[in-house]
Image 1: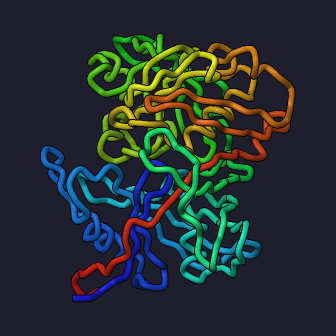
Image 2: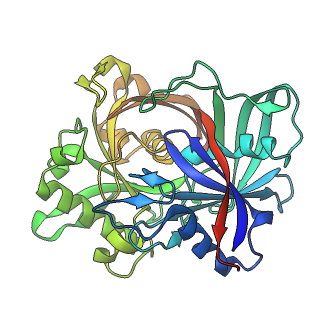
Length: 378
């Protein structure tokens, strides 16, 4: 048996296994088996129990190294693992786990840090894009404790500011992969549905809640009726075909479970969160629910930036129909608050015409444990 060191980290509202690239085999074709071993995949989803425990919420892997690219400090290679097949998919990235990259690099000596505020320049291998991670260091170690609250978490933490620079087109090469601000997706017996497809951090599909039979205030899967879920999965699958992620739309449920996300948007409204907290119309600019193969319990960080970016640009679904008057401004720096099942997600977008220069969010992160993975000799 071979031992490989790893770190299990909570980043934002997600969790992932982090590996130093130098500890993995140089033959990258061997990585998938190692990742499967770490997470206990594939897994029986009727009784999901993996190597890191029962009901693991996010099967994610991050591989970190000193950067091989000029002008960057570290490289971040993200893999979304398919629970059913155990296949590693690196065609998208993870905004939440991005929050742990800079601190992991600092704590493992990949970058030089000083006490106080530090900024790490990260090259995202998946998208070929830069993001900046700014965090606090004390006594040579990244600070974990703090007062920053993320809806969906019970613990507070030290703030980590993530600034995604020129995030458009990381997967497709274009902010709007089809060349249009809006498209119509044929949902067969359900008719055509108007959507915005935007690739910003990750490719997402934006659709109005009322167009798919939703209120936009749903908190869990059983609040979405069968017809609505069929429409959403058809839209997601057909956009996956447009993005060349799959050949047939029905394959997206198995072969492309992570991207594209669907963002179901609606006008700002009062509602009670999954945690029983009162959220008011005045707290947000719009509501959004994220759909993969089911409803996301909060709202993905990458999707938050993409949705807010779309709201900055005229003739998109959300700019035309789902934003409040207070964000109809020509300012280059636009601040949005998105209402999701567990609370509100603030996002700051810097836009120049129809170019997204920056998407900025605040997250927290903490190490859960360090360990040694035992696997067959590679």
